[in-house]
Amino acid sequence: MSASPSKPVMVTHLCTGESEAKRQQILTGAKAVFAAHGFEGASMSAIAREAGVSKGTLYNYFANKCDLFAAFVEKNCREKLEVLAPVQKLSLSPEKTLTALAREIIRLIISPESLMLYRIIVSEAPHFPHLATTFWQSGPKRAIETLSGWIEGQVAQGTLNVDDPVFAAEQFFSLCQTRIAHRKRFNMPFDNEAEDEEKVINSAVRMFLAAYGVKPSEASAAD
Image (cartoon, rainbow, N blue to C red; front, top):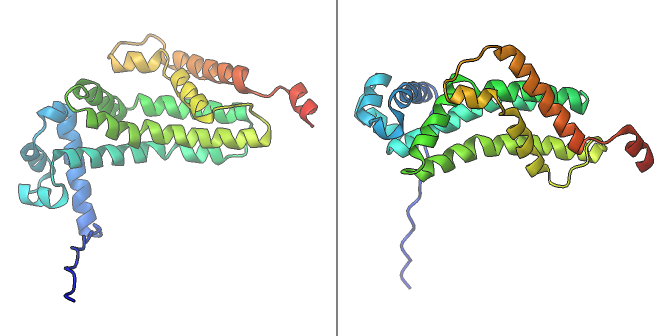
């Protein structure tokens, strides 16, 4: 019996040392080009020039523009979302935790990088729907999963009463996007941005706890 042909083995090389530094250099260049020209208007040649590398080097790291954009989105979202996890690990009341989270969520949403990504996705999604999927999975979906995990923990402790933690997390993110986020996305001016931010934060927390918070009398009855 003849031996069956062996299947090809896929080898994945991890970037370390100078290779990882070069990858970050490319992503920094890509950020500038995507910000200036969007996804469709960006070219691999322009990205290579902006990053200070040859096209050959660029293609050694990323097979095509879609792969490069996906890596850029994933890196940007991962770095931005790092601010949410520590807040949820603090031993604070639900109100104080949600207040701190709302503040970080708003700052994350209106950061220049987030606004740039949002505008690219909205403008390119009709022609490149996979870009929206990449952004959703790397950013909003991860943020919602992180917050829903915290909500589940609060439900277990009896401080919140939530049937659908994922939906509740989506609601909280939506509450945090009122007024400020939309105006920033449209480049509209503000008269009292700091005052509006506090209003959005306090209102989001108050409305969320009005819907899902466990009142002291309810907690006592459960005991």
